[in-house]
Image 1: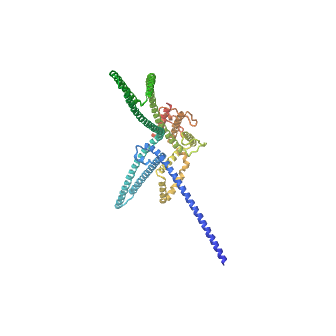
Image 2: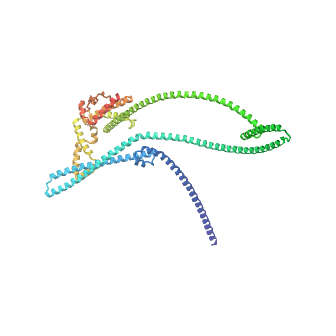
Image 3: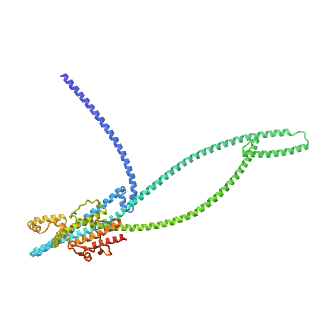
Length: 611
């Protein structure tokens, strides 16, 4: 029992120690992960700050471009102030798309309202007919009249609302079209404005760099000049102090010497006076002494003035000083003569340089006048070229519009002929957005028309025309309503009169051909004539484009020669069904206004390309 308790105790103690070790290890692991996460957070914050700085620099660069682009629009400039150039362009594109979507939605609502109005008008006519055929009492008639009046008022109100919404939709459409045109016009100049602004920014940056270099050089030269000025001021102050100290020392020495000389002179005078001289000798000696004293005093005054001027106390030094002054005077005279000669030479050089300057000045003025004349001629040539470029851009827009109309017509024709499969299906390597794609479509349409002409040979034209008229009648009725309304009407009619419709549909299915069988035969005489006419002026356009590109087209037939009127484009057209020649008067009578406009347009473009 005791051993078992000790074993349990040891096991428990080992378990506790093991858990403590695990707890400490997990704690250390948590502390390490926390430290590592903090370091990563700090690093990510620094990276975030750096990215924010880069974003601010980029936005500051784009902000100027946006200010220039939106200088005349206050609210839009504030809205696009914190966006980049690409983001601003994308937002503008999104706005245009949203407005076009809204316009399409308004068009759809107006169309649905118009269809609803047509339905209500038909319902009103049906009710009128029923009311006329039904015989009812006066009370019932008045009630029906009141109900009809109420329905008419409600329909009138709904009609007014629909007309009002239609007008609002048209106004919105006009505004959106104006905005779209304005944005398209501005988008054409965005690239040039951005390039010019980038060039100005680079130019200003280069100028700033040059000015910074000049500023640094000026600062360095200023510091060097200040240091040199301080050094010179210290040197001048030191020399001035030394000079003042020497002057004071020399003045003290001079005063001592003058006092000693005065004492010696007094002693000599007392010795030289004899006691026993005659009156004449005394008179002569006094006169001589007076003259000597006068000369000595004059010499003393001159020597004193010399000492005060030169600061020299010894006589020998004074003599040496005067000798040096003489030599200096001779040296200065020599320098004067040399400087006069140099001055004469410099005056002659000045005259020559001034003469050369005058010659260069007058020759430079002549050169400037010739360059000014050349500049004016270049400006005139530039204006002429700009006018030619403007006219060329107008003609280019005209040609692009013509090409777009022809492309739309060819695509419409290809859509009409999409159910006819050609015998040789070639994989086209032309892109759909290129101009050569129109040629490819025309070639395909020509092959399909030839196949259609072969299929229609030897068939009864009267039965085909009758089937075409009936099919067109049903397709027109179905085309007036959208798909969801036709489905609802079909479901309602099936629930109300299922037996009648089943009988009628069985009889009609027995008499009328299916749509899939009649698709290749849905061409009446007018439409075939129009197809041939369309093919003819499309070939004219192809000839025009081939002349422009200097290439020939061998896949289409040669068109008739161009004449002054569009009738000349259609001479000699043979009907594929009746095999008779269609005259120009019949063709012009069958052409609509839009078709005639297109023919005239192609004829004008062809004549322009020939010129």
